[in-house]
Image (cartoon, rainbow, N blue to C red; front, top):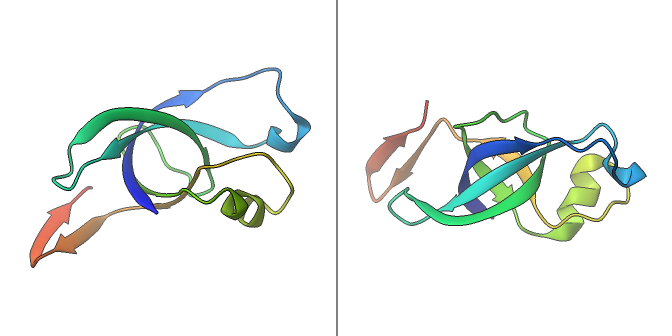
Length: 95
């Protein structure tokens, strides 16, 4: 799993039937200091994240099948929205 920030959403009128009804978001991975890296990707969103949210992204393609409850082609899945986390005793707030 990796941390990322949601920076946009994807709108697609024509897509694989496995994607119908699924929300796709653009994420930008975070470095160890919580800054965006510029390394962006598209992820399924099962956590109802929004633009600006800091999220947990599962990078195992099999997790998309489990979390979406169907067979689909997908490597990245947003599986949680972070409110805060603690690193070396420092609390980082995200909401």
